[in-house]
Length: 337
Image 1: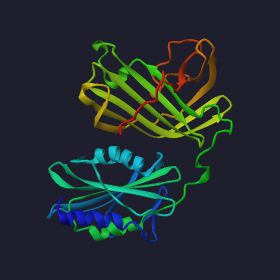
Image 2: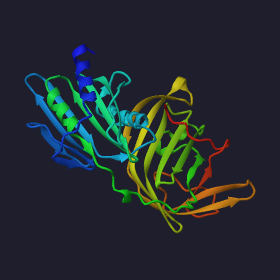
Image 3: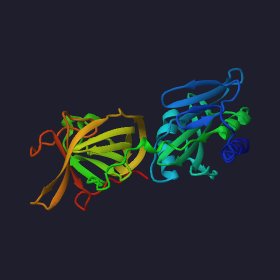
Image 4: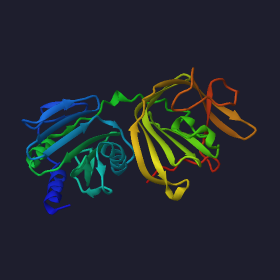
């Protein structure tokens, strides 16, 4: 990367500290679009762009809708880089992180890397803001310095409002399901593993229910006969009413990872794509199995779900899945680092 492009990137990131009074809003973000740039508003993002067809130069900025965040700004940045950036361009290396000023309660993380797409080379810059259990991402894709003043002004203009406090309905104080619960299964056939290729492998599905009314769900599928490891990562909100557990996902992705040295270790991301958001009302109970001295979180539904897979063959409860507490015999899913 030449020095002039590096200066552009540093300028774009380090100047995101003094935000102008915005004139337009999208989700919880406000911004001032550059004059003369095209604007396109979608469900998940608003995009502003400009290009010079004669010179072959362009700049595209996407400001994304807020989604539930993870525990730290760097975790949010890494998750967004693996999805948002890699779904748009093919980057040549891991992102180079750049210090970015925080804005009030919003903590910022930023990084960049070179990319190549359809023979065009340029730079992708990801800017991630974390606050109030949410994250907001802005992605800059450009192959020129020509639009640096307008791009910088746009980024400077972005501001965020605090999400409504009633956007998450907190469960009762004596919430019986807070914690991490997992089920071990045979591998999910729906993820592309040939049925006739042998049964050596496993899947593990895992819910983590937090006391603030949010949840995380992960699913890992490993098969000896399949050349990939499949990972599903989902987060959203939940609400308990009586014996009903209402799950409302807000973001879900499914990824294919290579096998490190051909074994059961994460290699590198091969593909990543959004997964259908599946809101489900479960009937739930906690059942104690005295023979093994163990409580299970039992979820029941009218029909199988993509998230949980087929119903358990154990018929104590009809149309049910049995999630066990995490222990040495039921270890937590280790996510890629």
